[in-house]
Length: 133
Image (cartoon, rainbow, N blue to C red; front, side, top):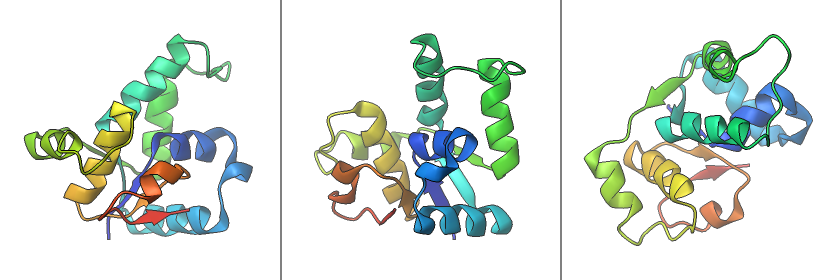
């Protein structure tokens, strides 16, 4: 079964695994071993923005692109594109999160009928969205 990672989960996995809960760690391991982990394409843009704003500091051997590529490769992530159905769902009012990136991530998980690994409590309250944390 496909499992989708929220942006912060990718960053925690890469740099702060101690911030992941045991259920999140287990879901990442299971999804990785099964080749069933994914993220919404918007997560890559969110990571790039964090670098631009100096909210993420790169390890010395990385560029923002190589950092993201390493996460994708290490986790075997599928990158799920933004589709008309996802865009429509994100703006339908079902996902009421104030952050457009989070609305798109939630809509991606709902559209793919996949659980979302996330610590975001606002997303845990979205009807029809299964969250792991």
